[in-house]
Length: 628
Figure 1 (cartoon, rainbow, N blue to C red):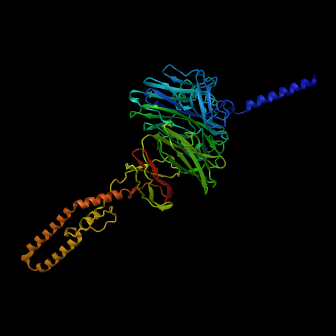
Figure 2: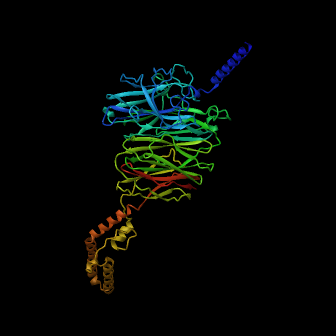
Figure 3: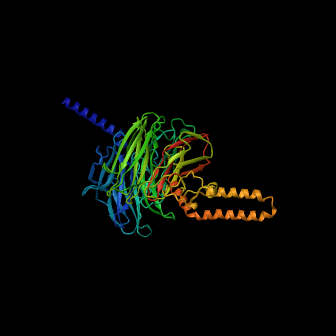
């Protein structure tokens, strides 16, 4: 009997220790599972009022919806049938404003990425009832509608708000409610419109005590200009969308430009005047910060045509370990034609000298014939090649997150924007940089020169030059440069070729023909030289006889007239030759651009992108120079 009592006490002690341990574990292991999300929508084919909703989400790895190590694993009929309060943890999609919330429905998810070491997993929503299809459809009438999806248990963050309440109040807070919403406007002024598309990694790492920048990327099938703004409390932190419309409290000192550039100066002398290691931003207790952004495509009057949410985290990391750098990365939206293939080349290096690992966070397809990649390293540089050959099942727009990871886990993230087109088109050739030479030293003003591209389809080609202090060109805007459409010889060359047809340094296309013995085919310079010789002799014998002056003047005028007539008779040949020179020179001429406002004692990186009229593009190498 005594033995039984002792065993009961031991069991009770173990249970108590177990419960205490569970209470002490971080909330992210149980409730803090939501990490990132974005939504977008497009119109169904040949249907102007049926939309297809897409959604990407990031979770902690142990979340019960998605705890799998298998990419492409489909979670069918996973019950998200919540009641909208978020208390049961089962988020629900609501098709607001048309009276048909998706209450009681089940949704299917497929796993797109797994990172156990970072404790996160990415999923996308779809329908697996008859084979996997990304996205779910909904039929609307013309008008304005909100679609939202909400739940609770966001991962704990630093930039929480006071006044958080357990029933989903208006504030943020740890283990708080979250909401993703997108606005649909179709018909009338919005006929044919679709939303922007974006994607972000669940967590973007930021080196402590540094100046940081990150470009949020979205693309739009309609080619609309996009505006980025901070999200509001009711858009991201209140399940039913009510309450405050104030902008949420972004990470301390962080700014967002209308073009999506995030800048965050977290140097100690900026974030905390006079502080040492206990400032508001650090890589220990204050390292995780939430960021929420709305992307809008707008009419000319500023009215939003649609909006999509972007919700993710920044994590502050060790100040002694800088992230890798991207030394080559495609700039701007890349167009790929259905049925063709395009290879994107990305290069990355790390200051440790060890080549980093480059990977794709959210590949557009698991089909290796559509999307594949390879990697090689040499001299501390990783070259990452991405192969994309979209087919008729591919979406029309993608934002693909590319990540470079150093040997001890520090990451650098950058996004590749891709539009898929059905219009056959070949890219122009890449411009070839000429000057300033790579690794050269120059003085202001700096003149840039490159050899122009050719286009296989004979499309007009335009150029954009990028000059930046960052080798990855983050936050740098390009400058449009007018291409030379035709070759126009300078004035002295025109005058030279008109009077004396010496061989030009720009040779026209060779045309074979039989040489005529007719006097009219003799070179003009021979005829002119002979006439001038006779004129000189005549003047020598006649200048002494003043009465012959009138004769001299008349002869001189006759000679000038004869030369002009000869020049006029040969006009067609001259025009043909100039035309040939123009066509030849247009494929080999150089473009120029001059900048006089560069900072002295500063190193810059520059490249040129050639773009044709059908979305094709190609970019040059990246060169550097220093202004002394």
